[in-house]
Length: 511
View 1 (cartoon, rainbow, N blue to C red):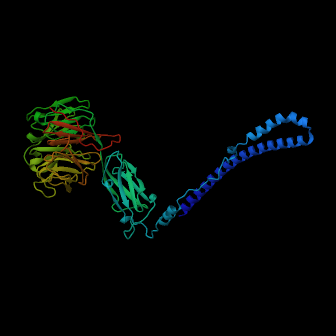
View 2 (cartoon, rainbow, N blue to C red; view 1 turned 180 degrees about the horizontal axis):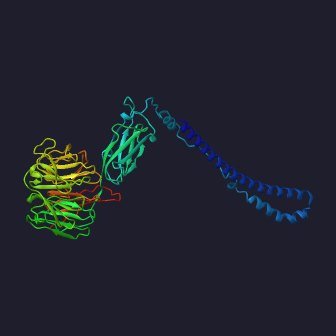
């Protein structure tokens, strides 16, 4: 109220100043007009005095001699006095315009006194912005301020604070807070880094209900710039540090290395000798830059140098240590360098040391936690947890580095967030999980806690027919092997504030 009084008093001073300035200008104009009238009146009086003096003191002859110039002077003076020139140049026409009844009504309804302080634990946030956002795009949410009794509670805008913090500490974004009405506040923010974030919402420096919120910031995709061609039945994909793509061409029983400018070199033929393959499937790059290939038909793992020279082979057909039955997906742990292999028909994950000696295994056939029904692919997140695409259990299972079960997500359905034969999995540097589904023929995007964020590819231009291979490079480009269509899709990020999320733009390579 004191602030309103100050505003009204300031407005009063401003209006009085305007009135005084206008009055002074009008008085100045009237004074100039008055001076003109007085000058003309003085001239008339001087002429009258001259005539009266001449009549008293001059002879008739002298009066006749001066008659003509005197009459002319009198006519000139009297002719200058026109009626319209006597009108005032200014009027007292200042009026103070106001809507007093409306102002009085507004003042009578203005404000409300709240006797209970805000209760942070009762304040609720809602809206898309507490779950998911898109890099470079503004996202909104709202906060309802409530007191201890759960009733509306008014707080100043500056008592509410919002911060979005990347889980790895690489980014901090502060939100903008605006009041919508007495106790509803609108908050907006624009994230700049993809991946999982913590959204902190505080009132008077205390977190509101459920704060901090876990927000997954998605990449913003656009059409890719490079074309990858000359592929036949692409399967597993891996991306090297320098941007080269290593892809399995299953029906050609080889692997191909494609440079950034599109040059391709292929290695391998069908067979069971060193450097030969029989329907290879998974591929990975180890911490030394070597290439690891799951040689499915030969029931073994082969290690090749960065130039695709054969280094070693481990594995034979069987169910014992260092024995495989149709190994599929393969990945390398980012911290330990250990190799995880989806030993599909043994219904387990076999773990090898970095030198490909046996380390252990976990899992068996079944549908309980930690059990598998034909596991197809395996990947690790930024924290080192291991994710397994459990195909016929229609789920993703998550394990600690030592194989201890942590959680699972997905179930057999065709809706968003429901999996139907997951066969490929990749996790980017922001801990965003991409899953390729064989029967749904699309890519689903999850947070690491299993919340589905987006699905794409089944309808529209990005049709898939067996997305058996997924990989994400450090720039956020998503690579999808579309086995049935013999296509390779590159889905690249847009970095300059795109208007919409475009997940289905890609380069289509038809052989």
